[in-house]
Length: 390
Image (cartoon, rainbow, N blue to C red; front, side, top):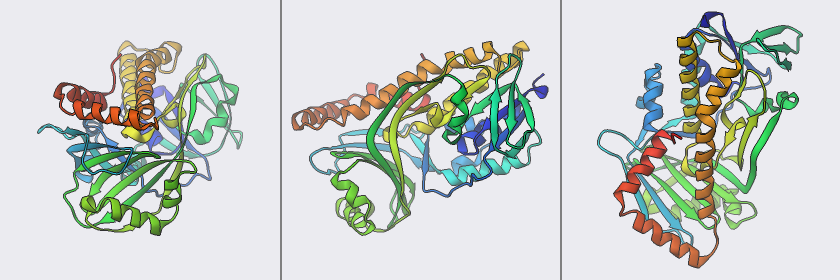
């Protein structure tokens, strides 16, 4: 029955391609629709995959991810409100069987998936612009700019670039909050070190994260308050290189250069379509969280795995995909978990955003005491790896 059913995935980024590739195993007819002018841009973004995400992707044939990844076996948290201190306040260590995370280049993962998609007969990449989407009880009709039409059992929005197409639907912004911060993403090239630890420094002007990419390369995600002193530093490469060599020489020995810097505005959003038929939202268009915990991509993957679970359920019962029962089951699987998980991430950001010396000292003491509690630390690792199950 699935052979005769069609899915339209709107977007051509990593999230869209991952959905298409993983759903191709069901022999559905899948169209990936991308705008004609949309070109893949090389960027320095590195992704942190949890052990659970890696294991599930490997089961779907993406076995090279582990070979191309750098293993994280320790995570250090540093409360550096007063000054940058390399002594960690809280440390998480991996068990012998599993890693805490796997750091992979997003461009490399994108290339691997697109190569696999191009040889699959049930996936088509359509470089067309969509004019309109018309709802129907039995399918959604997509009209393209060249006035051709296609009917789909399910439409998946996986890109914020096409959000204007949702103007005719009831898109409810449950949460839309600006952090008044920008994330600066770039890579450090440095002397060869045993680079297996991720670090998060909570600075006064915003969190600074280091993700180990290779022995001589580390990815940086620095969230900086607008109009702060650190914003001036990050916008001058010479000053930026000096800053890292002065404060983090003990970690990297010597930093020789910094890659191109990408800048993103940071906000916390949670969107939902009300009473819309046969449409689902994925990725940043559904929910966007602060990069403080490196969980954005894992959250998207968990949603994709939930979609797969619902498709399997429908297939076993002989149900059609995309109908009201299908949509409700998927939303029941994901909405509560996503909302609570993203709220927890936002809560962590709030805790480290309080600019008060007395509170900062109190917070630092809590981290030090928490570091002694192996039970709580183990449960926090489990949540980061598997998400919540509400």
